[in-house]
Image (cartoon, rainbow, N blue to C red):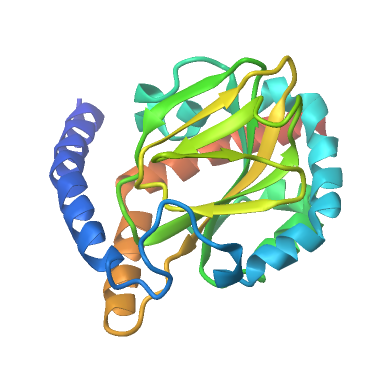
Length: 249
């Protein structure tokens, strides 16, 4: 009963916090050092070069994981609130970092990828996002502009356009070894219109601001990182991680 009451209380807090985060994000987004756009030019983010130059090494580590992809957790297994967005077993994840928290065992399986990610300023979250054949992720929005998202194409099957992401009014066709940087608070949706797996490395980095907005943004991100939602998600992941490596050795 106590746990149920706690969860209900946290849901109420989230309903109150969500519109507040949207308002604050929309305000500070106007003053970001990189502007406020659905899709960004990679030249604004030097670290995209690091990922693109080493993408084959990242893919090699991914390929060691993919034989076990059916055992990987669904997004909603880790973040239960994502059940609204995804309810099947066709969107798998392999977390390396979640809101600054390192997934130790997974990172040990991917030492090169981990080392590269740790060189990215402000990197908070990173995971392999694995979409099953013919998977569609419906239109949705992130809730806070204080972070910027990137996808690095790793396994992109089919012809150009078979695997596509719409961001606002722009369509992005991933390419192997190419990074895309975008603002996930703009409406976006994803399709894998092929009979094979599509995999990208998804990461979130802190959006750059000048002081004092950088301090405000970092404070909000730290508050989110210390919330019960993030803590429960990382606890769920730790349980999966320990169980998974017990079985695969």
